[in-house]
Image 1: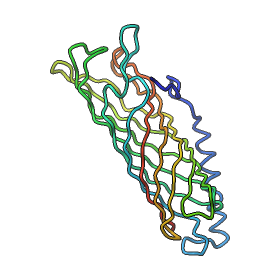
Image 2 (image 1 turned 30 degrees about the horizontal axis):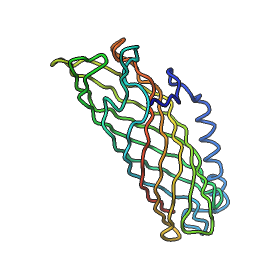
Image 3 (image 1 turned 30 degrees about the vertical axis):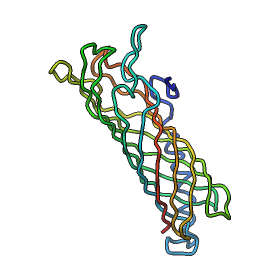
Image 4 (image 1 turned 90 degrees about the vertical axis):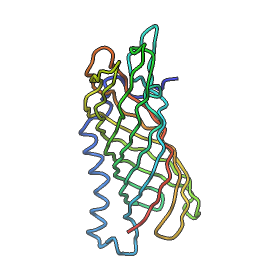
Length: 234
C-alpha cells in the first residue's frame, strides 16, 4: 500500500520557511550565550545527538504506474541503513530545538516487472539532507521519557542507473527535493549529561528527476527509519 504524503512535484516546503525556522531555532541559543550560558556553564542546554538506523521503504513508486503494472521503491531497493547528527538547544526541560544532517543508503535490487519484463539491476540509491525541527519530551522528573518530534528540510537524492540486458542506462539524475521526518520514541537518561534512545520516524522526500521518460517516472518516497541514538550535553 502506497503512502502518498508528498505530492508528485516534490515541493512541499518553501525555502523561505526553512530560513525562518532556522532563525527561530538559533535565536534562543544566541541569547543564551549573550547571557553567559556557555557550553561549560551550569545550564547544560547545548548538545549533540548521534544515531544509526535501519531504513525500510514503506511507500512511493520508483517507476511509472499503469493499469497493468506498479513499481514501488521496496521492489527496486533493499532495506537501507543510515545515520544522523543532530545539534540541539533545550529551551526548557521538555522542549528542544534541533538542527540535523541525515545520510541514508539503499542497495539496488535485481527487479523483473513493470518497464523491465526481462529483468534489470538497479544501482544503489542515496539521500543526504539537512533539516531543522523540534522535539518534545514528556515526564520531566523521570529517567525514562517518551518523546515526539518533527523536522523539515531539504535533501539531495543521488543519481541512479539501471543495467538492462547488459546495457547501463540512466534512470534518475541528482535531485534536490523537500524532505521531512516525524515520529516518536523513548529516551533513557544515563547521566546528567547523557542519554540513549530508540525512535521510529516517518521519513519522506519529493520525486527524483527522471532521466529516461517514461520508464523512470517516479513519485516521492516514504521510509520508516528505526533508530538507536545517543545524546550528550556539552
